[in-house]
Image (cartoon, rainbow, N blue to C red):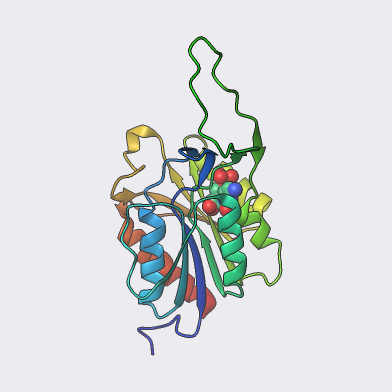
Amino acid sequence: NPRRPLAGRHAIVTSGPTQEPIDPVRYIANRSSGRQGHAIAAALAGLGARVTLVSGPVAQPDPPHVEVVRVETADAMLDAVRRALPADIAVFAAAVADWRVEQASVHKLKKTPGAAPPALVLAPNPDILATIAAGTPRPRLVVGFAAETDDVEANAAAKRVRKGADWIVANDVSPATGIMGGAENAVSIVSADGIEEWPRLPKDEVARRLARRIAAALA
Ligand code: C5P
C-alpha cells in the first residue's frame, strides 16, 4: 500500500525531557516540550509503522495508534528503549539530562537556617543514542538530534560520526529563533551524503517530511 510505506516496520522514538531526582520532591531536567518527538511518532504511525514512543514527562497528549512508555530518568529511558528492540528505525528526539545526582536522597533535603546549601555531586548519564547505535540488534536507521546555538551544521556533522548515527536532525535553538517550545522548527538533515537544509516549517510538517524521508531510505 503506497500510503502506508512503513507497514511491517517497527520504529522507536524518544521524546521529552528526562527528570533526574535530587530528593523525593526535586529534580534536574532539560527544557523540552516533547512536541517534535511526539509529532515524529505520530507521523511514522501515519505511514503505517508500529511505533513505540518512550517519553519523559510531558504535557503532550499520547499520539493516536502509538504505544507510549512513560519514564522519568535517563536510565529508565535506556531500559525502555532496549526492551522495545528490535526495531527498523530509531529516532532519538528526547532531551536527555547529561547528568544525574549520584546519590539521590530518599528524604527531602531540609533548609537549615544559617547552614550552607547542599552541594550536588553529579554522575554522567548513559548516552542512549550512542549506546543503541553501537549495540545489537542495531536499528537499520538511527536518527539523532542536535540542538545547537552555534556552528549548528559543523557540530551536527561531528555529532553524527561521534555517536554512530546515520542522520542528525540539526536545529538552531538560539533564544531569538523562538524554536524552543514553539510550534515551528528550522532543521537541516545531516547524513553521510551531506547536508540538506529545510525551510522553517510547523513541527508537524517537519515530522511528516522526516517520516517520508525515512520511508524512502528504507524502501
Ligand atoms: O550530545 P547531545 O545531547 O547534543 O546529543 C543530542 C542527541 O543525542 C539527541 O538525539 C538526544 O536524544 C541524544 N542523547 C541521548 N542520550 C543522552 C544525550 C543525548 O540519547 N544522554
